Structure formats: structure tokens, C-alpha cells
Image 1: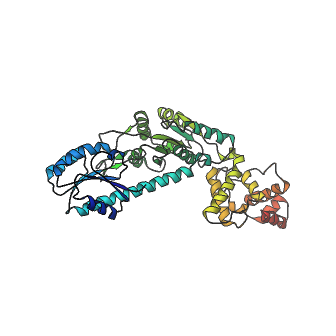
Image 2: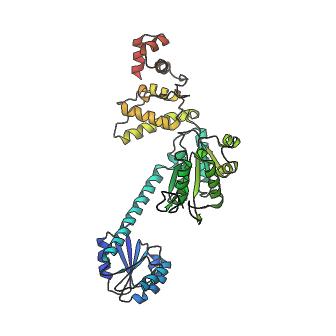
Image 3: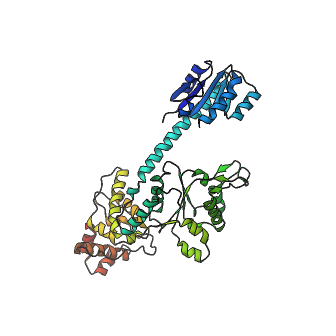
Length: 441
């Protein structure tokens, strides 16, 4: 949207000069009206009241105009004193500029209006792009467990005040579901604010969530709104909520009950209008039993539970996701889309994916970047961390004999830490045969 300035022209003293000044400052459009009528129908980034030598009428004009517009209102005159300035502020004016001596300050105010309009348009464009990126039908998978979870999310998307708890292992896509929930719902035009509760110490996390007033603690040199306020009108996503410290659990419970927050160091509470979406890989039921998580908070968060199954329980989705990541990686880096050979597909299906979708995405991206026109199984580098569950899974079956032989060759090579002679001896075949099986992948 172009930036628009409204000018209420009580006298003609400054009208033309104001139009020229606004255009020089980067304002895209200037609308001039003779009085308060019609202002309420204008979408404005700023409103200037030009009173010329009739400053005595300014307070009355401001009194009529301020209720009719959400734009900041300033007055431009030829003369002024502190009594007039005080009266204008009482009626809701932001500034009084006396021309010609205040022309530099007025130009600065106009430039700020133009810049804010550009920032607002940029933010709106970003939100539109995010909404497209996180389209609900963009979550890939046909497995029953995933479809059941997404069907539940779809049912509560229109209920924008309902709290949602997303559970699942790390890497299953909890953040992606939270974003789809936000951008497809009534709050999609509002902010999506994310915080990882495990990433900050409790004291810093409290300040980030609730904000603080100047002087609330040693380094609080200025007041700062918190993330609850930043998410007002939108969604606050609390990732890893299971790691929240006990004192913050109490405060979060209070916010969920009252929908009000109080900054650190403040005596005044503020209303917040948010949808809260929480996520965790922790078993909160077990955490409640052992006393590390409050039972009352669990029930407040668990209004609508959504569980995302791990990738090892979504075997049919592995190749769907892999092909999607192959296309996306090739497009991102300007590469030709490589072939996904049967041996690589078998390897992907056989692996148990302890890192879930995130691990699959990284493995495919690595293979695309290291490979040429065909993905190679060795470039996937599966199970590199040696963590539990990180070893190759069982050999693929049912499968062709050729696929089983190739998978066995790779499994033996992994077991022998890359020693081809030992792998060939383990399989009871020659090194030449082993090389052929590996090369065919």
C-alpha cells in the first residue's frame, strides 16, 4: 500500500507548501479535505491540520478529528505558545510545528511516516509469503498417524482462542504444524512469535516473555515489551515447554487463566489477546508424576492435544519426503534435479531415522550437493553420530534380490567402519563383487 498523508486545510496558508514537503519526504499520496468530514473514511499514515494564523481554532479541530482516525495527528501553524501546545496535547495531537522555523522537524516527521508505511507493506508481504510457505496442505505425508494429527489441527484452526499442545520427538515438524495452524487461521495476518523455552536461563526467559520496565534490574536502562505483548493479536509458540522452570510454570498458568501479563518492575497489568501453541518432546504425563511439571498447567495446555508420530512409524512417507527434499534442494542451489536410484531408496526406507524429518532433510540435502546426476548411498552419511537407533535398520524386505544385496553391502561396510576388505570377508564375497555392489548405488 502507498503511504498516504491527509491534510485538513483550515486556511490556505500552508497547504501547497505541505504537499510539496510531503512529496519530497517520500509520501506517495496526499489527500486534502476542508474539515473533519470525510477523514474517517480515509486510510492514512499521518494527518496534518493546517491552521495558519488561526491557531485559536486548533484545539477544537483536534477534538473533532482524533476520534475519527487512527492516524497520528499534528498541527501546523504560524504562531504558538506553551498554552496552545498543552491544549493540543490534551486533545490528542502528537506535535505542533510552527513554520518556517520548524520545517526541518516537520520534514523528519513526514519522512518517518513514509518509512513506517514502507515497513508495514514489507511486513505484510512477508506475512503473505509465510502464509504461502506454511500452507496447511504443504505438510507432506500420507501415513495414518500424520493424517489423523493434521485432521485434528484442521478442525480447530477456526477456534483462534483455543490452546494447543503439540507433542512428538525432536525433528517431527512441531514448529511447522504450529505455523500452519497460525497462518491458515483467523490470526494469520497477526504476528507469529516463537520462543524456545530450553534455549535461555529462567531469569532471561522471564524477561523475554513478560518484558520489563526501566530500572527493573541493573541493566534495564529502558522499558521493553515482552513476547506476550509482541504476539498480541497473533500466536505465541512456546517450543520445548516441558523444560520451563517451576516458577515460570506458575506465571504461565496465570497468563492462561487471566489473559493478562505484568512486566517485570511494573505495578500495572496489561491485557494480551493471543493464541498459545505449546510444543514439547518431553512426556509431560511422566513429568507431572515425578513432580517436575505442574499438573494444573498441563491440563491448561492440553486443551487440544496433537501428537506427531516419529518418522520410523511413517515408513510410507519417507520416499515422499525424500523426493520433495531432492527437488527443493536442487531448486535452492540451482542444480539439475538428480535421480533417486533404487538402492538409495532402499537405504532410506531401511533406516530408522532417530532424527526424524529433520535428519532426512539434512541427509538428502548433503547427498544432492555431493552427488552429480544420481544420489549415492554413501553421501547420505546415515547414523554418523553413533547415537542409539542411529545404526542402519533391517535389510529391506520385500525387495528385489539386487536391492537386498546392495543394502547388505552397505550395512556390512558400516559395521566394519568403512573397511572394504573386512566387509567383503563378513559377506563371504570378493572385494571386486563388493566394489560392484557399492558402485551400482
